[in-house]
Image (cartoon, rainbow, N blue to C red; front, side):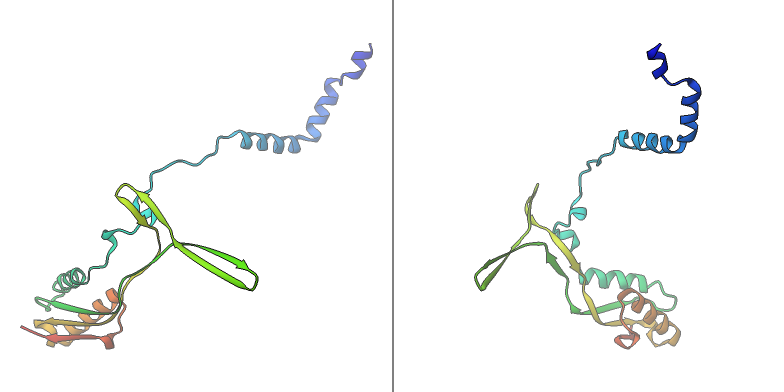
Length: 175
């Protein structure tokens, strides 16, 4: 009889469950979340994602001029367009570096080493940031350059694509 007295009856269990049902639900949800498999998916990173220096990332001014000329040639009334761009600053890459500082007495010494990764094609430096060129001016020569409407459209297009103000873009008539 003593064992039966210690065991709770079903009414007491039901009362306990109804009283603490929200607390028990939160505990059950927490256990489920803990048991779910979480982990990182491993994925091969491409050179663009890792920030490795590559020749494909170099800025090519003549190619940019040709591409811009081809696009501007499609402006109605412009004709065959030639473009010349000048740069204020060129392409710049800031490499990632490990910096260590050592202090001895009153002297401190800062040592910086460029971060190098060993890739399939040899050692390559890790690029922290890239600063693309800043344009200084643009000259556009086209047969329709004398027409004010064509001149305005070309000036606006060059301004939009290069970030130059209209005072730094010259559109001239040519043959």
